[in-house]
Length: 440
Image (cartoon, rainbow, N blue to C red; front, side, top):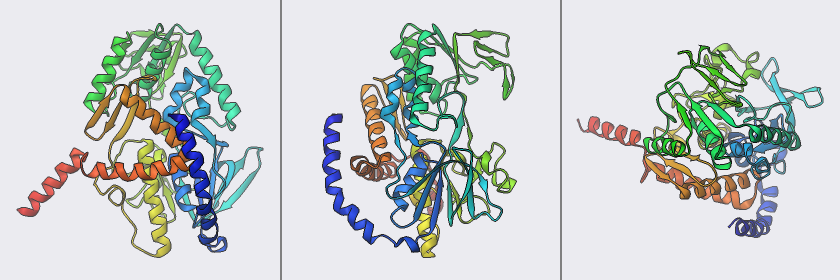
């Protein structure tokens, strides 16, 4: 199947040549383009790059030379060579790419200050700044500043795999999507290892659909995964009693293992802006506060997307929602240039008061749970869909025509389904209530 997709992609590349030539001449002349600087080359940043580069002077800034498909990264714990399948060079054909670490803005907030890999510094002027700098996560799940090349990143995963291979017992702290998926990968590849998941809540995956929670919990128990739930770790966050060989619970129990993984959430990667923007631009957790146009509070030309920001919708932080953020930002940049009325999130993107809940939770390589609002599909079909999603998303990030076209179609279909046949029950209830009020 993958071979067939590669053949289709090759044919599409040939057919794309006339279109590329056309856009080279038909786009906005470079001297007339506004400068857009995008911080972060992940879901939101790359979505903006694809949609803006024909009519704006786009520069992507990232501390590393590559992108990686984060939802597929947990498999590299058990198959380190999988990194090659979910990564690639950051695009630079239609845009500029600058490798460096964002460290702030200049005093009048018209240029991004970066620290280059070699230690030097420079400023990149902008008309619009798009912040998609993502988040920090414990351990190796997110690349560190020391992993600025794919070779460095691969070395990390080779090391992580070897440590896991030698361990007889594993403790995973956190029963959310990351913890459950990591357990699924380990138990599929190493079924004889003793795996324990502990969480302070009484059930796993508390933000997911009940059918997904039940399916994943049953899957883990059938593989003798030890679930220690409703268990609070001793100490006060962030100084919890966790060490390299286990953790101590508030009731005095001690959970020990040969290797410990912290899967307890993330922090927004916005610290580089703390000295450049007013304090009231951030919430208490460090997220940038975005208005309904996804502009940073108080700034008309600075936008925030993905894990770096918080919005009144309180949507789940997923790759899918990060790209929806990006679509709205792109539309509002075009509105600003056309002096048109700005569009509000999420209604202008999805045609509903809430974004569709769309996820695919892996349970190893051959099992998964796919959720689309109220619909849940469990089993091998969901696992196959996860592979299709991953392969096509990576192809899209690499600017392969088959990936770009697949997701132009896929986005249209998913948004249509999300507001019609698979409409979120919250939106359905809101619409019904609004109709009742109107009738009254």
